[in-house]
Amino acid sequence: MSDITVIGLGAMGSALARTLLDARRNVTVWNRSPEKTQPLVAQGALGASNFVEALAASPRVIVCLLDYDATTKLFDRPDVLPLLNGRTVIQLSTATPKEAAISEKWFSDHGASYLDGAILCWPGNIGTATGQIVVAGPEPVFDDCRADLEHLAGDLRYLGKNIRAPATLDLAFLSRTLGIIFGSIHGALVCEAEDVPVSEFTALLPAHDRAVPLTQAINDGSFDTITKAGAAVDVAGSAAKRMQQQANDAGINSELPDLMCDWVKRAQKAGYGSQETAAIIKVIRQDH
Image (cartoon, rainbow, N blue to C red; front, side, top):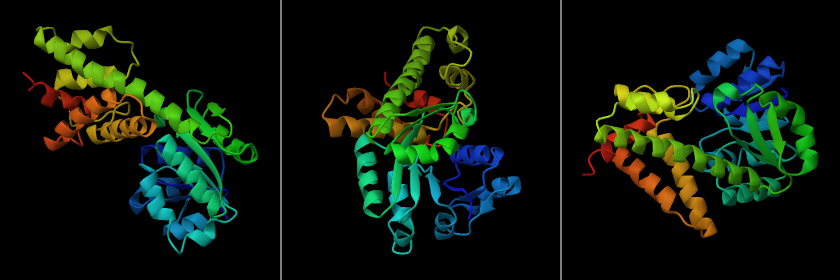
């Protein structure tokens, strides 16, 4: 058996797997698109040919998928359920607090130990002192997984038993980040309206600010290129929808995520879903 399995090899999942391999852990990897396993297999990972094989390979499983719906589709199958008993599932996919609570109960009902976590950094930060991950769940389970999780983030924070806490902080963090992104798109629009180069706006920003590549893309018109610090309209839209869902679940004001979702939907309808989030400016330019 391997020490740990990583399910989902997008940019973040691949970064998690590479970091564990660098830490000399025996890692099994699986992704729905098999070609994404190849670089990690070349680095020393064991590539599972199917999901059942990947799950059976390790006592501990990290799940890093787009959302919890994707997780449910993989795990809620007759050939998978018997394998859950006695295993530990560390869920690092994105979710609302309500989804995290539902997920904890579902995995517990099927005999699995469960931790829910949120990654509050970019893939390039994984395995470094600036990597930040928050985790919640039973303390004995966290203690058992602590060594592996510490490899992944220099800033690893255990939030206690409240399984809703990581998703809550993730949404709070996303609210701040998306506020910067959407606010900066409007800021660029302000500059354009007053005949001030958007590059002058960029020059005012801190060097590592998320709005730097965003405003550069607007200034250059390079919406097809997504930098390491960037994200596509579709990705931003997924995050905004989770903010909107949490607001509806909790009965709090939803006007900010409602606006973000509206901008995203219009950009997607115009065919910009796979472009850098900055492409949203192309549809809001038409609002006059």
